[in-house]
Each structure stands twice: as structure tokens, then as C-alpha cells.
Amino acid sequence: MAEDAARDTQDQRALARVLNQRGLLAMEQTVLSTSRSYLSESFEISQNLSDKPRALASLINLGTVNWLLSDFTQARARWETGLGLAREIGHRRYEAYIVEISAFSRASRGITMKRKGCSNRV
Image 1 (cartoon, one colour):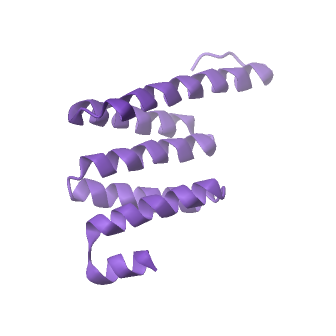
Image 2: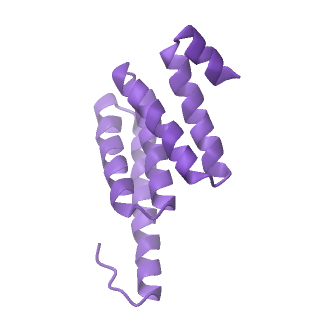
């Protein structure tokens, strides 16, 4: 398995990539706590390596998992951190994507709250 090989060879960059991919796969399979664990480890490794593009990808994915888990505060925090990082490294595509998913999450959350009879103020 790729994760075992990366751990055995202590290839931290490869491990961060593999963990991010495993996190995405777990998210697709709706095993969200496992997804969050893989993505968190990928983010931590990427941060330690100063691999900002990889850290950014992990942050975006962590935000999405948190949103799916209805942890909207944490999702927003991850996306806002990711937006700052995207701007810092000049990654326009990720910057636009974060702005889009943040707007979508606010809009969809407002709809959910209205259905529950709550104010849509966040």
C-alpha cells in the first residue's frame, strides 16, 4: 500500500499526498470522521514541510468535511485560512473555489435554517 511505503521510506511529501487522497476517498464514501483524520494528518505534514500548495488542498478538503459534519464554524475557519493561504501563494483557482464554496455553504445553510424556523443570520 502507498501509505505504508511512504511511512517506511519516511517520504513525508508522498505521505501527505497519499493521506489527502485517502481523505478524499473516505469523504466520497461518507466515512467522514476517517476522512477528517487523514486530511488533518496530511495538513499537519504539509505545514511542517512548508508545502503551502499541499497544505492549501488539505485545508479546502478539511473545510468540506467539517461542513458535511455540520461543523459550520470549523468549516468556515478552514476555508478562511485557506483563502488567506491561496492569496499568499497566488493560487487564483483555489482562491476562486474557496470564495464559491463559502458562498454556497452560507446560502445552503440559510435555507436549512429557514426550514427549521430559525433566523438565517450566521
